[in-house]
Image (cartoon, rainbow, N blue to C red; front, top):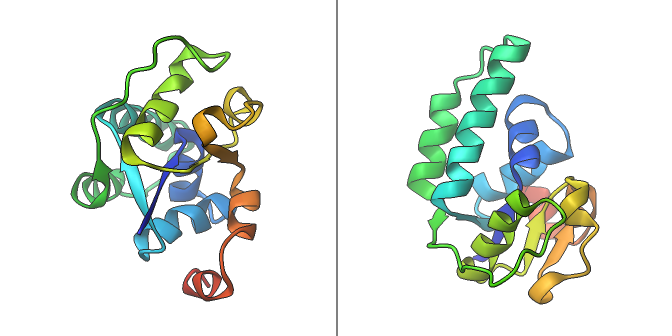
Amino acid sequence: MTPVVIDTGVFVAGVFWRTEAHRCVNAWLRGVVALGMSAAIYQEYERTLRKIQTRYGFQTNVETWLALVQAHAQWVKPWPLTAPVCRDPKDDLMIEAALAAGARTIIARDADLTVLEKPFGIRILTPRAWLATLSRADRRKLA
């Protein structure tokens, strides 16, 4: 299974809203891809899921989502970068995890990531652009 890293904004949007981001998260849940995960990304997922749940009053059980990540993600020790790559150094954790997981793609909407020109050969695609790369058979799995 091909590993990908899903940026926090995409993952959180995929949990709470039925958008293209949801289809990206669904791709992981249905075995189309493996989710590359580091402890730092997990902590960011957890913090942001709880923040958005509180802000909007969602009844979604974030514990279930966090348990799925804990149990089914491809856990990696981040590959430390020797120098910042992103405009926002906090986003470097996505690249570090992608390098460690052998992921060739990061799915993100964050402009600090999407502006990059394929760092270390890793494509950074929006949810829509990434979904367009899927085979017809994989797209059917997400319907």
